[in-house]
Length: 588
Ligand SMILES: *[C@@H]1O[C@H](CO)[C@@H](O)[C@H](O)[C@H]1NC(C)=O
Picture 1 (cartoon, protein in one colour):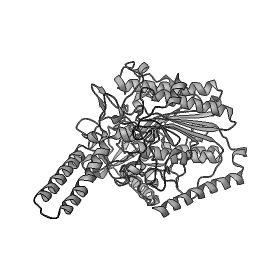
Picture 2 (cartoon, protein in one colour):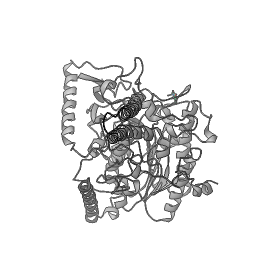
Picture 3 (tube, helix red, strand yellow):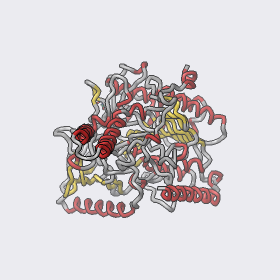
Picture 4 (cartoon, protein in one colour):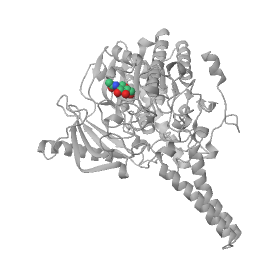
């Protein structure tokens, strides 16, 4: 473990030295080619592409996101690297498929579930924030992180945003969860893994009964009965209790390394995030430096928690209220940029981490988003409903208003695009899977940047995309599809899993032309020689890609995912309860 951490640190410092050296050689920020715009990245949580006005929704109001599209570009084929938060965000931050960072797993839990679990984005990965810092940027992350906190007792905070390139951090280290909500409170593990809960409870009961019987009938020594009691009962009881109390152990807001609020006050959280974002922009207005601000909203993930003024205002229940409030929050940051005279020199990028969660219900209403005409949703790695993101970008003077980009792009393009802007070479010690899309955004070159894209569900590739030279064609090959309930694109469990009975594997891969048939209703005949050739070409690309993936320490193993009491945060111990008083005065 220790030597591992050392190797990671070494690798990390090597790339920083490498970047710094190339910067010195090429003039970096002072070179005439390099540009250093401010960068604002908005990340919505679980927002579907069908939820946003400019992507065709006519009953939900998202004027602020629509305005970014109008003043800049709409990316209609922009893909997340995974259909679920943690791996998707890992790829966005690093420009690499999550599997390269050990952030993809075939275990059922594919996201970090505890702030006190020793797993997260490895230190040897270079995030966009670390790259920006090298280029002289001030950096801040406001909102959800979900890429880990600690490596272990002897390496505290190694995954924390402040150790991954951010100068300032305010937000939740984990994510919003159903467990955190007032009257709609529900235990996520309870609904996602009811079977596991039954096993745990049975283990506790059986262990208890067995050791009692041994004790009573003196079958062996009393010490052994006691020992059995401890060994058989405590571990499952610990797992059960910790997993049933996610609010106590995970509902918290940190400012840098300190917990400032526990549990999260959902009546105020969105306003607080806005305040923090605006405060950062005001500080940056004074500093004569470019900045990277990542605003990572807690919405529109359940628990749905619209503030009072948005409750009951939309036509789509609590879910719609949340979308509309999130859009308003985007507007508040955009207004601040404008007011401070920063907007003209700012590259703005808005996206979601994965598609709408189709299995979510909110009483009568839908509880998760809408993915438009695309099949499937959150957690279904190979399906466009889970990975095609409502993405818009603007940068005055660079991106023409009303640009529409229809060729496939990716969240992973952010890193190489920034390196391109900064006139920095791509790193030579690791693969970046994204491409520089600056020429595409600015209309200099409309060549599709990606030839092949691989769509993971966990650590397996469920489908792959091939972009041929013929305009308008985009082929998609499926190796596995979710085992949907008949007539719907949902699984019978709370989320679709990536293996076992959740998945149907296709010995003969399925083929679609998603460029011409975006809803994927017309499978192509793979016995046709032309189509067969396409499948073979994609198979070959998958093989080459898989060979390029090095084995790295897995982050999301069940053991790494266990909450450890020694890594548990708690403010105002033993109450584990505190309020952010500075916020109250800011928000009046
Ligand atoms: C707009 O979004 C809502 C909420 O997700 C959804 O129920 C509705 O079907 C969408 N409308 C269209 C036209 O896509």
